[in-house]
Image (cartoon, rainbow, N blue to C red):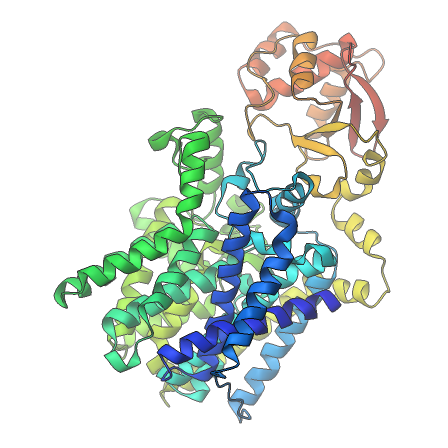
Length: 631
């Protein structure tokens, strides 16, 4: 808990320090808007600097970079004292505040409980842990996600000394900063009542509420990129007295680019709309300046990737850019997985895909998305779709709002064509809130929209509470041990302690398992779809396979069998000689498996154990540990 509080204080300092500069340039902005934007910009600036310094070997300096930088900012800000007004909410605002506070508390339980979410364990926390062990930031060859923009993930390095909760707390406070920013924006452009409804819209979206308690970054990325689009539209379409300084839009858009590749879509959509106004107003140079500053935030990532792989957005768009250490087979695996979300890409499915976000969210989130069985925690919720449709159909939206809706339309087209995963749409919430602002303050529209937003927020809170919140509270309150909780949800967590007892110089190749974060030994993802490090293509025999493992300094192989079909598992155990009397794979079976690298590694593993080139040294409930003999 102390770590979470300390991280909160750190970003309150950021709100004060950066907010002072913003207030000096635009004192017409709402005080809450100034404070929230200050915190978001402060987080982004610190995350970007940590990322840059970390590449020079300064990972250990990450906490000090944040503390020194923000302390200096606070001292400087003390001269201007940016205002922050707190008024007692009344009526609807009071109840909205209560619901938002409860959503915060449920997310807090997620922060304090052990991490169990897939991407959090696979790479969001795992990559920073590896960086710390290496003492510097660098791509991890077997985790292609480590080539992604990392302005948000770099923040975990600041909280790492305070444990998992200290790292994850950044996402919680980033969500709060986004809510405060949206509150201030709507209080300035609409009304106090609309401002509280905006808070519910943001914090009541399932993906935002859920990720506030995890190490996923879509919430913080959505705040940066979504508000970047909002302030870009305000800068070119609002009256001059309602605009924020140009650098606010530039920095927010830049942080969207520097935290996730989807920031490119937001930047392109914003540019497509803003350049129309810029051309009419003869402000092209200003628009280009905003674009240049925004791009500068992410340029180091693109340059690094291009230098190391030949592809600035590695591993995406392999067909266009290529990329060393990757090939079309692996690119197809990635593309096919991304294409598995949603309802298909036929042009006639566009309406179904858009509205389906509300009525069949299981098709837009992992797992089992093709069956509609995805977790609803990653959904954007029906309320955001309702507001977008209402804003478009009502004819009440003002000029900046219409521009924002145009940007949303472009983003939805890109989302429809590339990957229909709903987690990627958190950045739509701020621009849709801007477009719906006139409706949120209108006496006719407000009751209906308020009912929808309250309903969405209460549903989201109940869903997260029932799915995980109540168990996380039992962990936080000491009723369940953290170890027991994690092992109940993450099978590998029960096996990891045994692996951590291996000799200190061990290196473990993980097959069908990616939660290396739980290991204190060196490891690598071994499946051929992750990298080309293990030469599954060339290896044909047990000795050849053992040699390519040794070339990667692998001493042990862990293979999880829990995801295999029963008949495949039993046949593999027979082929490996682990079932008495079991026959090796036939020539026909081997030939068929050799045609598919996803199957060939299983054949190599079985043949290597049967030939003695690998030997089983550990057996778990649904996994095996094999040793790679040195000779």
